[in-house]
Image (tube, rainbow, N blue to C red; front, side):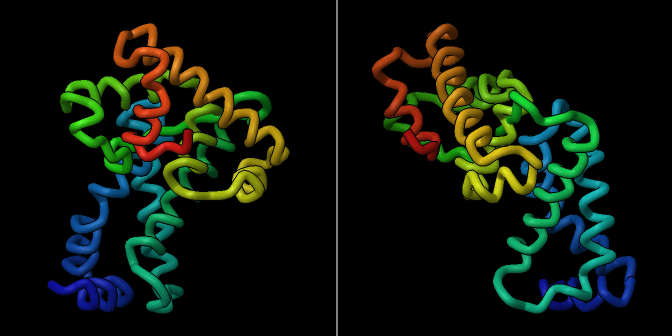
Length: 193
């Protein structure tokens, strides 16, 4: 089934088209949810709620830009809304997305180290993870993040700076990197230095 067939069938509430649509996009979107969630169960709940919104709003998609990008925006906003419902954002915010972290093998010798980096990012407080995720991986500006999370722009900036410092400290303590290698790691992981 083509993307266009899945889309038009899903809009008409065709169960097989909706199933194909879900099966095509849910694995990547689960990765997005997992970056924001505390655990897999929470990520699956976020994914479920996100797809309910997607299916109810699918008729609003105007074929402007990639369908996957449109879906991703709904999923990210769903995750943020769930986080905001469950936690007040003052001094802490969070991030991670294993699928979005691009590891260059010449910089980090093994896949095992890449997994260790991802797990270290998951150790950051939720506030740090969220800001790092939205800024470094999703590409939102600090102004957009502040609006999404109902925080000050300066809070977003400071959360991002603290997240990078804490991540570097965790990676150093776990001997995944040496202190001078941090900038190389950030480049390898696709994070701004």
